[in-house]
Amino acid sequence: MPNRCAEERLLYEVAAFAIGKDSTPPSSKVVRPVTAVRLAAESQWPLTFHVAGRPNLLGRRDLLRRRGDSRKGQHATRYLLRLPRRLTAKPGRLYWDVSFTAKVVACRRHRQTFFSTALHGKPHLLIIAARQRKR
Image (cartoon, rainbow, N blue to C red; front, top):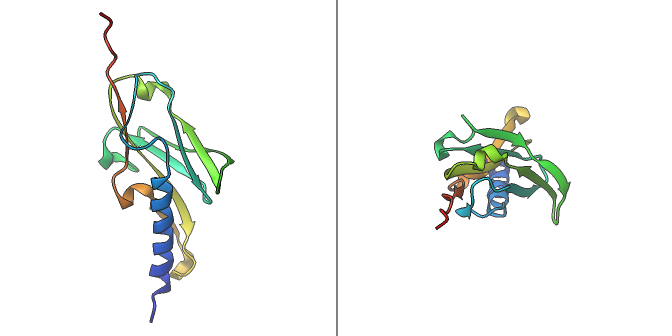
């Protein structure tokens, strides 16, 4: 007998994987300090962006957690978040991911469930390069 709850949760997890895979900028993107960086992803569910200094802090002690601004996307609603320049001011690494909540109807009590793109692999990495010294 199939477990409808597990099947429906798996569909949402596949959707979370696809959202993470198509998010921009791509992982390991290198930017200069104080660069305006825009995070983006498309989804039929409202997306929240999480930014942290270490991957294990995502979703728990974020430097920034904010719902993205919505616009019409190519396949679904496109959510955008411009990072504050204070987060890109110093050289280092920032980790980010995207999450959404959905009501899993096939599960008992139809709970709202949290789905993160980072659960299906590593979170995205943004590298802020050191400033080049003038010679």
